[in-house]
Image 1 (tube, rainbow, N blue to C red):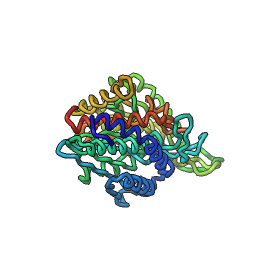
Image 2: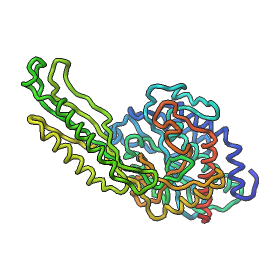
Image 3: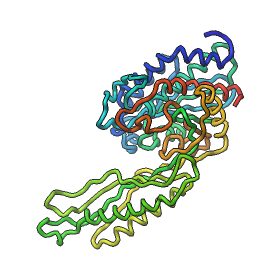
Length: 416
């Protein structure tokens, strides 16, 4: 590596490493890490070895089995890489290696990492195994800058975790709770054409409607839990329609949403069903009070079921993910990324909110200024995130890596 302007060193280094970054991402996609079932330790083992091959010292932090099981997973090992360049701020870069199961409808092997027309296809290639590569190669570029003689102040940590798809409680939240890291800033996995500064929270509830079984020949002698559940669901959908009048002030976020995503119940075709269980997802916009949302929704469920004699209803919280909202200090990350994205992408990018929820909220809740930025297109839909044929334009990976590397350089040299 030639000695010279640090920004030129970053560009030269990353231009030479494009094939290596692509191979690294492909190797990660080829190791399944579906969650559920959440047996993610094998992926962490593979990622750890690959990172060590780049010369990083990799810390492996296995989560105790009891906590893993309570989180609905089979295994979880969080990876941490730390590189200190001198006195100054510590910036954590977090991406998750667990993915949703691939489902049906793929035109390519979801674990094949096939490249067609400049795009790599595979489950997790965009969300968010790509940012293992983004952040790892950005850090390698900083090491090249330091080796070329530039003086950097501060540290960069890589936090590669494995439970984002089920809430992040034993990933970033666990690392912070165990005092394994306390960064000054954090960048979480995102997409290249916008800086995400806010996102929705989510409430997941499991609702159980109980009646009394009976013979189908004498249905009046039972209490039909399915009939009651149908009415409760109708009331929920009416409530959902009312959410359209609640509008967020955050660009990119519109209104609260509610989806019933899972339902099961009944005993047999010729038996009055005695129990129906369903799970719902209520997205919480940044302006809402999550506790009030939960109380209001539970009250609506109970009032709906109370109209059915002989029916009992119970509700269990599965997840309450707080919204991610801007905090002081975030503007430094935004300014650095926007400035460097304009240079690398050749266009201005702005800030936005997104209607999903991510691990970024755990850092922000701990008082750490955080944004989402990484490799990918303008929208989740363009990447087929969580759908068949998830894909990533490899040029977006390489450009985002340079944006992140230059932004970290600014933060570690005081330019930000």
